[in-house]
Image 1 (cartoon, rainbow, N blue to C red):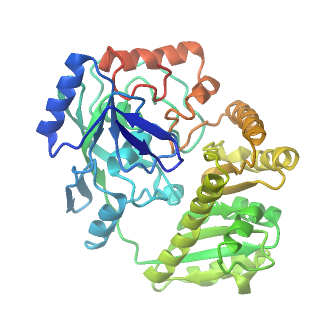
Image 2: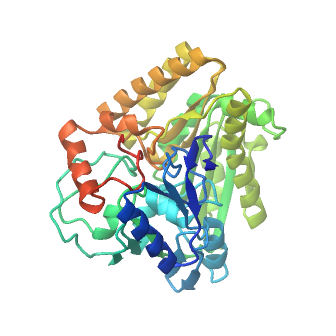
Image 3: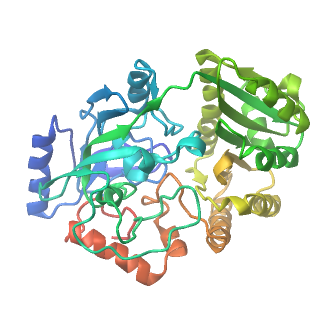
Length: 449
């Protein structure tokens, strides 16, 4: 028996763990489990937050050895086990960038594609789906699919209503005329095994101005979001609320004492432009704590700000684990026009249910924030589950999604029923059955066993 744990603390157990050296070994193993009708789960870098890559028995297959990274002009060929960090570094050597920027840069590209991951720069560059040009997929019976962007599915696809959000990772994104590659992006490893991908690279900007802009009050920061969202050149617009900053202060980060919220920004600038001066004016006009805020244009500055941003979810995970519980966080997004109203709803509900044990942070430029509850007791966990269900109902009623970038995996698969009708779920299940008649692949992920 092999025990595996993901970043959320979700634990899986497999009877056997295989780490194939190449595609031929993978195919041999898949054919074996297919013939014996053994459940099999594909494992990535285990940075996921929904338990999708954690096995419930059966066999587990890790693609950590699938690590090619061939950078060309405008694209890169990567293996499923290639890490985001390695791709970013290889692209930078040719003065190119990979647009999607999930928070955990040790995540694997295969896992990013399987969950349609995004991150801070999705505000400008979109989710993973937008950057995938080609996929190589191995089906459970060993069949190889080599799929290019623009290639249609070879069978009819039902039309499911898509949420009115800028990103989406709650089940299959189904619509007639869709590209075949899009069926596997965001499918969480339940249809086939992604072994390789070609992803789009973009020219590296001439310069980047990064900042951590502190505000005295949350309402000032939220007002700035609405004012800044359409600003030219902005590539990142992230949010941290007051309790988030308090948690980071407790971890010895030098957060402005008067700060009750902050926005993390990044914008492309030309060497000769006045963008930096214009942004300083914009920040002052928004009532920010300019003198206490942080700004920089160097790679070292950007890394310092990235570490600051990444420290928050790490601190949340650590605190919850020390209290003896698993992470309780949302991955909801709403249409941009409902961002302010949804933030008010979150705050009012938290004031009554979790006044001292919740933080809100995330990709507010996309109206996609993570509400993280910090339970102290088993009763808190039950109250938290009820509260998250209320949040889900409101989000879907507003045209939003119950999963924007993490997928639903095993931990959150019950939320599918909030997003989709029974008939729509049955359409997804039919797609699953077409590729995996005995429901062996990723058993328990997205759909109950």
